[in-house]
Length: 312
Image (cartoon, rainbow, N blue to C red):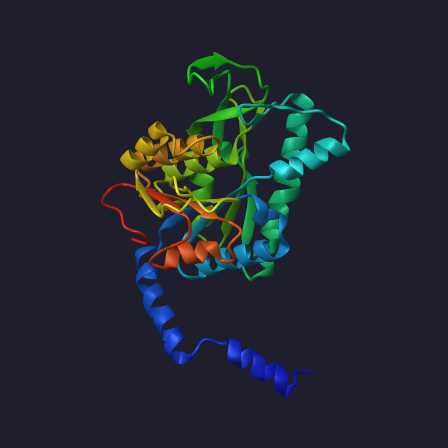
């Protein structure tokens, strides 16, 4: 039973009428800009393992769909794959950040990504009132890929031959199945597993998968949820916006370094392929998707064309 004290507490937490009007006034122009647009969202990192953050994410996705936006969710699952491999006593290392994936490992990867995580996210969205459908890159040949056989050396940046097994790089994207789902009242949730032209199942990095899909679909935005605030300057302060030219300059001077380099290089490629902007978002912030799309300042670092504005 709700007590008078409980009611008083809830009333105190509720925004005033003036504050509610301000919030709506800020959000409505963004709702109009994104009406019937496609937004690809890569869901991963800490938020996937935090029940409250996962629920907030699911609510955000449902709200986007109800607002006339077409959200397309691509998810990761590295920690969950690692846990399952450990339980099954299957050893698996990494080469330049990509998991070495032999035949037994790729079977586990597909089982965890497409069979477990995908359905958990689908269920979470459905619990919040949405109608999510889980697929993988193998469905309807959505993501055809080829085995990665060479990668740039982190030190010299020169290409070197590698053998990391069934790990793929997209070569052809056929988004028909995603279009069909998105144009209905359904929400596609996609596991980043692809297929080769020879019929082999290939493990694809979730960022890479989402980037290729966003570029092919000419999405309005690509949002990459991560475990960092975004790109930081030399004083460790968040950089809210970068043009592709500025991003390249920061890589060259060393401000952007380590694992952020391939992520930013991927952002640049997506923007140059026609996506208006890519945003690296701190997935640890509750409702980060809504904050990014429907407020003036957003959350994280946006990499965009020079003529693109936040939220526009």
